[in-house]
Image (tube, one colour):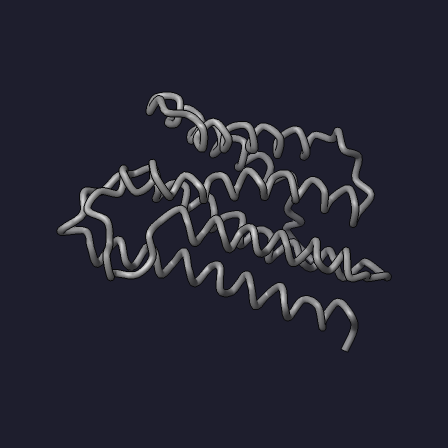
Length: 187
């Protein structure tokens, strides 16, 4: 077993739990749909989180090319997965016990912190690209990630609903471009 294969098990474990958490939260929302006032925004952000969880899991194969691993590089790779776990765990409520009556209120109070975790993901992903692959800090992919981070921060800190809607839509547009740019479609 190579070092990459050994380390990828831990990262896959965290990512598997992260995906399960988002899907379980979607299931909990469905089960509570009759007694909860729904809002579209947390569901859109949950979809964004899933996109990044799957994209990161797929991109893990690129790490196989690394010939040297340290505790720091492993920690960085694991930290990215952990941030995606946090994003998925916060953006929607999980479980049916004490499910909120209003998803908009939940998102405004707690779910927005999942969006904040996605902002952190953008920063850590750039750090990972620079550290692990020697990417230039100022590159087209990193400009997209910086734009996504700015949009996520606007949702996290903004109070105006129209600003949050615009930032949510813009995040989605930037995500489409960054995921396409970052993804190797065949290995």
